[in-house]
Each structure stands twice: as C-alpha cells, then as structure tokens.
Image 1 (tube, helix red, strand yellow):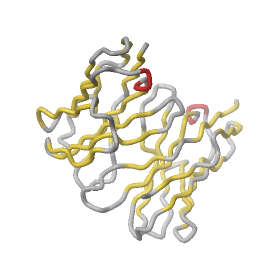
Image 2 (spheres, chains in turn yellow, cyan; image 1 turned 135 degrees about the vertical axis):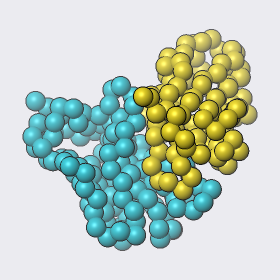
Image 3 (cartoon, chains in turn yellow, orange; image 1 turned 90 degrees about the vertical axis):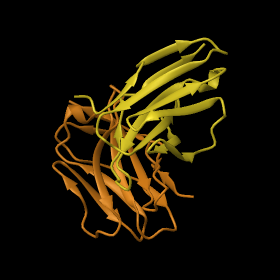
Image 4 (tube, helix red, strand yellow; image 1 turned 120 degrees about the vertical axis):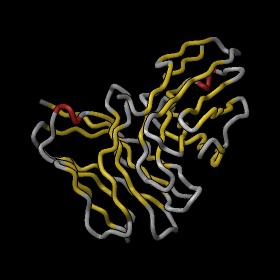
Length: 112
Length: 116
C-alpha cells in the first residue's frame, strides 16, 4: 500500500494557468508538508500543516495556497503559473514530534 | 537559521568498495536530529539513516553508517560494499526538536555514481 501518494506524477501546463496537485497519506499522521525541489535538486520546505492547521508558511508567493480538507489530505493550488514554478513538488507526512518524514513520489511540474 | 552544507556535488565509487559522503551543518541548538535521504532516479525520497544529536553512538543501518562529530558539526555517511543500486542523489538534512519547527533543512545533495 502506498503510504504517501501524489497526483499527478507529471504536470505540463502553460504560463498563467491555475493547477492543483493532490496529496494523500494513509499513515494516520498528524502533520503534512509540501517541499519544492528546484532544477539544481535543492529541496526546500514550503508549507506544513498539523491537523488541518497551517504551522509553517515559508516565503512562498501567495499564488501558492495549500488546502487541507482533512487530516489525510493536503492539496497544493497554484494560481497564475510562472516559468520559475517549474520544479518537482514533494508531499510528505509525519507524526507530530516524530523526526521521520515519509515522502510522496513527487510531482514534476513543467510550465511552458 | 540552520544551514546544511554538502561540499561534494558528485562522488563516484567502484562496486564493492567504500565511499564517504560529507555533510556539515550550522546551528545554535544543542539538541536536534540529522538524516541522510536517498533519491534514486525514480525521484522517491527514501530515508537511509537518522541520528539524534544527544546520542554519542554513531547510527548504523546495515551497510550504511554515519560519523557524527557534534563539536565539529559534521555528519558524514559511509556506504560500505557499494552496490549498483546505491547510485542516487544523497541529501543530508537537519531538523530542530522544537515543537512547531517541523521542517527539514536540506543540503544541496551529492550525486553518487557506482561503477561496475
């Protein structure tokens, strides 16, 4: 069974469009995250949610909006996509206070 | 703010030999967690090994072990008996123990090539 799943795996879109990436975890974890990996492979946290509540919001353009309908889901909506948004986006989850995070398979977003 | 530095963008090793990947970090905290993650071409982030800073003993997981030098803020990963499947990007990461600071801070990664 997949622990942390993301859809879609690949997303190709035009500049200016609005898109969403979905994330689901079946581990019963309290905390979920979005990380961005740029073209140089650098991974950086974007958001963290604990029990549907935002606890970390790094310096991310407000075109990015996470939405957590329930504890098992954390979706990422991106409005007015820009070329610089092209990256691989990883969802992750963990128990509160637990150091181990489980990562999803990543979504490669390409903005043309 | 904490930072993590991996000074080796790329490394290579012969199959069955040993390789060490270096990682240094900067923090003012005395207690924290350190990790090595592996990212193969499939893109999946896989936890390789973790170390609690309060533990003096170096963590070991089968062929993977760390050399944790707290005073030097160094956390290197040693891979013994390297296998072709070990080829991947390896990321060192730091996590603060403070509640509400759940994020991982990653280094820029080291690409490991294993030669047959």
